[in-house]
Length: 382
Image 1 (cartoon, rainbow, N blue to C red):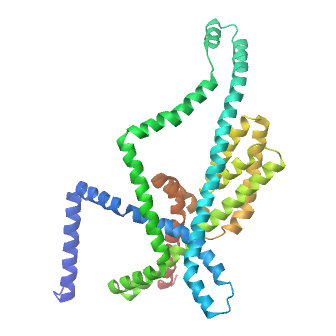
Image 2: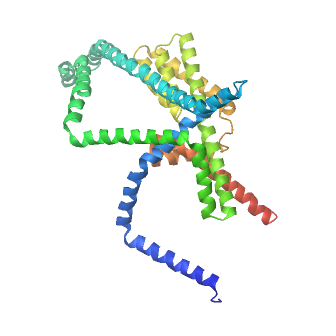
């Protein structure tokens, strides 16, 4: 090897990388603590970026609709350009909070009423079960004596749970300093993240231009083009996935609400909202809503619960074979086996949020890998 300037730079780079890697491995714990500390600092801004990304989807759609409004004067067009961004941002935030408010306003009161109704039905059915058990085990004196001494005070159980939920848990949160600090930190993190998201939405064009300038100044032209291509692909994939998933969940929830009203099944609104909300979780979400709905209906009428499960399976087939391919379609461009892989890995690593993130993330990686494989095959003329 000739010791020219280029080779010397390569050797120095390899030596530097090796020394840095050894230093990290020898001080792995300290480096880990430092990375955790840095993550705690940037976490509110990461959350703010995620909030801005989600809000940008309805905000961009509203801006496009406002842009279509015909204005004859130039002054009117200038006014529209100034107010279009604030109006669309406020409407997008209002829409998101309205959806959250509807979910909370429907689910929480209905669940409270459901718990009370379950308590009433259980208090009526448990004595009958106790009599049936006594008759069944009438030849076993010890078992009969044990059953007679059992005291099923369901109302007392419900009141105990309510007292703990409203008084016990409240007192713990009030008098425990660590829990209080956790709540305060959570509120502050959300506040900082939300304000940061608003700044991103207001100045997203300037931020995009500045980011492009920065990477252009640092990297070579080919690397800059690759970064911009990956960024554009990631944005399109994530936004299409979120839009399609929300629309599909809304359609599925509406289908359940209408069909349950037609067949006069109880808790139509509650189950419809629950299934629409849980259907945002890919693959397994709707089944969670089905389980909760079946349990609620079971307390009212077991036969209706069985019919509800059959109805769920039918509507799932309709949704999976007709609605989902057209609404979400090939928005992520990912085969079914890799969707299952992404949901499984994302759920293990990050829970429900991981399920939502990993599908478009794996889709981006899949697209890049497919492009690279095709390129290599073209080079090898295969």
